[in-house]
Image (cartoon, rainbow, N blue to C red):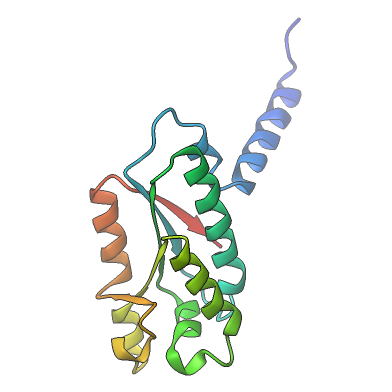
Length: 154
């Protein structure tokens, strides 16, 4: 019995939609771990970290359950990174608390120093628990060169 083309296309669409809802499913299905995983966050939404950081933390836990010792980092280089400024600790307490929780889980969180500079912010304007890379995109490319897999988070 042959599968009709419309049914086949519908099944492919459902599979792709389902795979897209879990950004780490393809990594969990691998036989071997990559050298590391970078969760990239770049949005125009100042509050995006309230959603993206919990996703990164849960994904890191799942990945490390499958691949113990896997190196995991988060790089934020959009408007959302400003929620992590020292001066924003009172207005974005969930983002700051989540970064500290990620650090406790051995997940580094970095922001883009170049983007910060465009808006008059310096590396010292971020708390010590937030790493400031010279350039977020360059930092991600450096990780890629080391074999890390980049996973974009909304």
